[in-house]
Image (cartoon, rainbow, N blue to C red; front, top):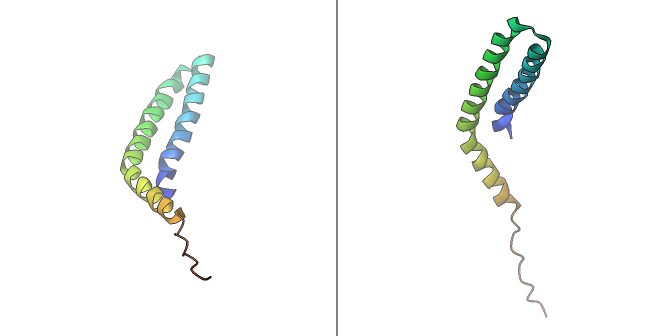
Length: 80
């Protein structure tokens, strides 16, 4: 699951920045609008790039884990 850690962190940061942006709009702190908006755009872009780059490795790991969880066929008991 380590493949999706950077996009998750970026999503958390974007959420925090969106909350700060909404608070800045609500309180009328116009000087914070540009930095918060730039942060939202930058971390969204970084998160999407990381997600697209790491998604194939994540899917491969999930397929391997699913294959490991498959039950081994039981041996037939031929004793009378």
